[in-house]
Length: 175
Figure 1 (spheres, rainbow, N blue to C red):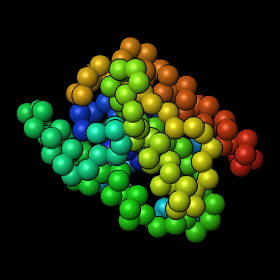
Figure 2: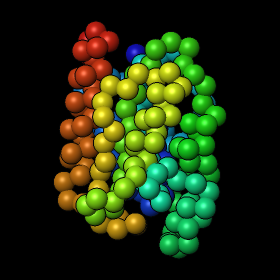
Figure 3: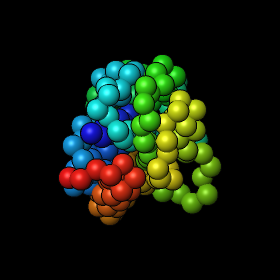
Figure 4: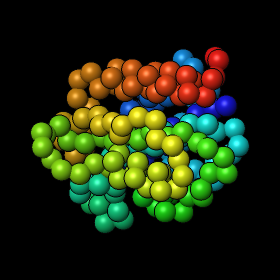
């Protein structure tokens, strides 16, 4: 059984968090990190855990307009240049067998800002029949383009390791 860390990232911050989470998961599971634009809408039978993440845009999952706005903020190429996690979730197929899931987002480190891409993704995954095994997690950036706040990559790695332990315990996986 393996895990997939599926991510959408504009400026590379969410991509870095996804890789750190995968590093933590790899203590217990075989892990593949996939940018959402390269992902199939149907998971293969060997996937037991899906971890999905995206940046929080306008208090939730990105939309074409918010991605266009992000593109205007940089002269660099965006990491995710096509559809985002919102579109992947809208077209994803219900898993043929039970699949565990967890979600994360990156967001500006300002207290009390409403909305969360991770919470929105968790609701959608639950509606598709995934079993959520952790509360949605947020990792913080200093501004809309980043950088990640100090210590967030290590926190993401630890969160991934904890997810791996939780999944392995529930699924009886030995690694």
